[in-house]
Image 1 (cartoon, rainbow, N blue to C red):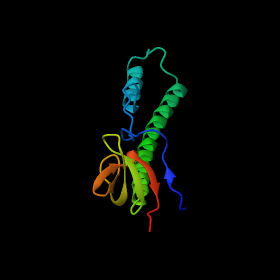
Image 2 (cartoon, rainbow, N blue to C red; image 1 turned 90 degrees about the horizontal axis):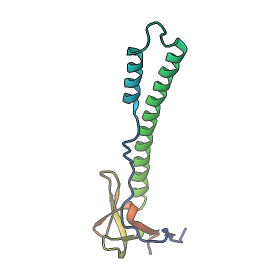
Image 3 (cartoon, rainbow, N blue to C red; image 1 turned 135 degrees about the horizontal axis):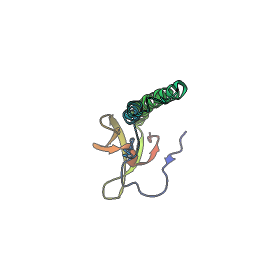
Length: 139
């Protein structure tokens, strides 16, 4: 395990994001509003069947649980990134700075705050997405 882990070719110019904001997605509140509107405006002479209503209720429950799973997954990914960042302490790394130049140094500590942990390389806080190479320190 003495070989360095090389990064993917190219130059990293921005940090990676862990969340995606999509405005075209419906959440459980929209689904619930549609269900209530359907019940409110249904034909009293021909109401929705019990089977159809139970199916819609089950779908609502699925949407709610999927949102919970997505939230838990995001938390697990953040924890995993934090743990991985901690393993970098003492390793020699290379990263791309704001000007596009490659800088090499040793990770002295890791700052865990916000969306992305930052490796402190020779006094400079570097987002993990900017790291291009990680290798064992030279003795």
